[in-house]
Amino acid sequence: MNKNEKFEFETKSNTLKFLKKRIKKSKIENIFDFTTENWNYNKIEILQIIQTKFNSKIIVRSSAEGEDSIEKSEAGSYESILNVNSNSKNDIKKAVSMVIQSYEFRGNKNLQNQILIQKQSTNIITSGVVLTRESKRGLPYFIINFEDSDATDGVTKGKSNNIIKIFKKISILSVPKKWQKLVIAIKEIEKIILIDYLDIEFGINMKNEVIIFH
Image 1 (cartoon, rainbow, N blue to C red):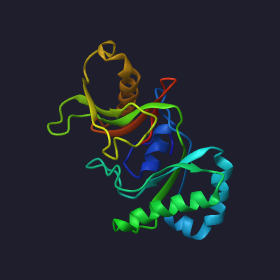
Image 2: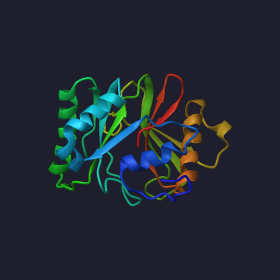
Image 3: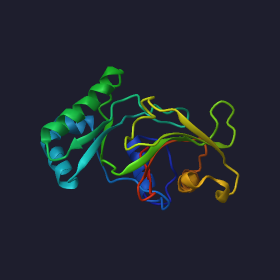
Image 4: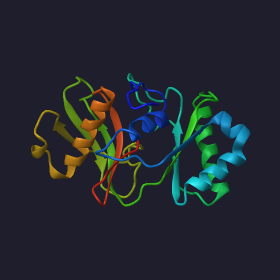
């Protein structure tokens, strides 16, 4: 992809790779992906690449064809396995198998479905999901559903329901300080992809850095 390429929803991994080259107000952890078909035929090579690229705990994530689109997001529909030991081939194989099985369980047997590997973010203090429009009427609010903890999946698994609404047109100085960097980061993403009806998973770490998960 070149930097002038128009954004189109594809897979989670492709979306993150598109954004990673362009964002400056937030960050995306390093990415490696492969398809179910790749895994079936090149498992040993893929395991070697993962262990070369990552020397820390990793997250093994779903990135299915059709998982996300402008019409809908299926965040949480498939498995994502956190805190996988990148030094253990058995742990990696088990996590990848769980993600692929979650595709099959939902009847999605497309061999071009991807599996996304990323470094597991550390020192997270707040995480959640931002809707960039009020869902029922499309009103111009950021709806932030969040939890304050070191976990990164509480909101997507329905374990947390802390919500704050921020009117999109107010001055950034009027936004509560806790959310200013997140709002700036989300506005940057809207400008990059030219869509303002988004569903974005995020984390904020102890350095107050905004990390985009999805």
